Image (cartoon, rainbow, N blue to C red):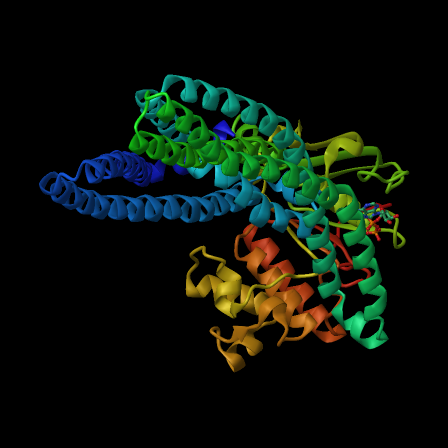
Length: 536
Ligand code: ADP
């Protein structure tokens, strides 16, 4: 978790204030106990003048105590909540940069990692260390205060605390193990729900919500069996033990104190005071036990998502990507993770600058897989063969640099909720003439003139046609003028006439910007323009 420390540097001020307020509230709390003891003992000897003075002191300290507690809680909340959102943002950025992680994860699980797992990690990272340090100081202070009243009682209390920490450590380890399992289970449920919502048209048309419900129920039952059951057991054991201690420790100190009162070694006020301190001791003990558990939970959960933060660093040590000259692919086989066999038959080809190449083959022959391999959109572990860009293996390059030269347009375009312009720019800057040029090339000129460039597209293009969606997807990649453009069935939703017009205009664009194109298309729209055919 060392890597995440930098995320929390911005909260140094909050940490400082929290620590000061925390120590302040504890010290004033202790002074209050001390004053209370004096008040009781003064009341017994009926010294009215001194008693009044003590009451006044008590009220002033009480005011300071309340203010310190409020400040302590305020800065603690800030640390927790702002820390959490900061880590979520950082994780999102890391996730997006680390495309390998996105590729390999189920989307639902990825969102779960970004949203739920980070909450647990941040809970420890934001305030864990400072809280535990503070609580240890408090524990020590309380014990010192108890020593002032009675050494024997303090010794007994100390031994009980040691035993409690030992047991709590043991239960905490098991609790953290099951918390990790619970998070994994939540990730899977998230993925499933995401998948169900994507399938909503099927679910509603076939009226088979019951089927999806039964599958969810089964998943829940498995999660309950594997994680929740164990978690409840160890949480209950831990809580019961801490509760037992909370209730018995003050009584034990009080009873032992009374024995000392009888032998004249302590006053009644001191006995009540030592009982109050023992009562207060519960707080740091419980909190330290909880904080140790938070740390274990955070470490366990971090283990699941550590890859998000790790690969980014490796990417910085890669080869510089030169202007495109040539791609060489020679693949004997490729196996998707967990797949039993190769997704394609042996294939070899070369693409050179300026080519207009077509990949042909039956459905399922591996055309999209070739494209995904070239664009590094699948895990490359299952690859037997070489794929080279300008004579070097493509994994020698950092993905982000590689994509400055090569872009792929997918068959299923994903649009964001926003205007046509926002969907094209996606935060980058282009001139109006550049935008007009790609709109014209993608035969979107009439569409954008009629609706306006600020026409609001609903999430994932819900209010435009499939063909328009596809063409906006192509236009936004053309706008970036990649040296190599890879097209995967991008005209499947277009009518014959639009397809022909688009193919002709795309060739004009290709000529003008010296692009190289590799396309899969069943529609024969690029047949007349292609100079190379690759069969799978
Ligand atoms: P094409 O584009 O030629 O239709 P694909 O490249 O999509 O073919 O698929 C080639 C083979 O790989 C098919 O048998 C397909 O079922 C399999 N395949 C595709 N994607 C995956 C995946 N993510 N995991 C496992 N197998 C896959």
